[in-house]
Image (cartoon, rainbow, N blue to C red; front, side, top):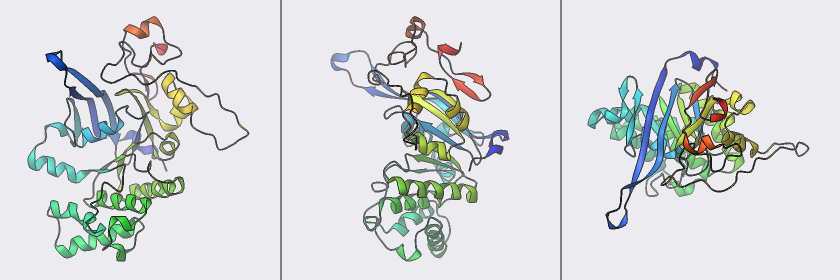
Length: 328
């Protein structure tokens, strides 16, 4: 269920011009080079809103989420939460921030300690932040396991005793232990079977209503994002090239890259034919991105201007932004 009232509220999280560059060693003292994993990304996230970040593998979606969480340090930019820049926080302030912004990781198996009871994994955030007594933490963990559809008697089991979908439910329970306001979901269902994906997505929507959560939902599967997201940002080579409300983006995609992505989404009707847009070539290396528009090497509409001039992200319709010279 999407939230029509989300648009009228002040942003809970405001991300401005964040960049994450990874230095690359060059032989014989050559000029320094950088992999531009995230390059000047901006967006806002409101209370109870779900923002989807989509794009091909390697476009910088997950790095964006990890940078906001400070799991990797930003090269530049700002991320404001409740008036404070997350990138300036240190020590206790940073720890307190992590109570309110949590993360669900892509691989539910590697994100859990194989030698730790799953109940202890859910309790661990409460122990780290010294919240509650031992009995209260146990009760909280039991309650969360029940909330995500697991039984309380499974508290003393190990991760390998659960299916992939159950392990992802455990990861979600752990992320909710500290009553966060924002949950960054990094490809939370991509490793799961399709039938299990729908169960986990429905669970996440129920928990969003119950706890008034905001999600930054990172994924490459547009059909999954369409089901859960209020708005979508499309990333290509470290940049957001288009962002719009979900229904608007699917009905009227503007950027040629978005049009190509949407043309690849299967239609559940074998009688209907779809004009598939096949992009030529591979994604350029973020170590040496193209000059001008980063998409011009694969764009069917590229002009000479696209090869030299960088397009700016501009609002072309109500809350529908695109960076493309076609719309200047």
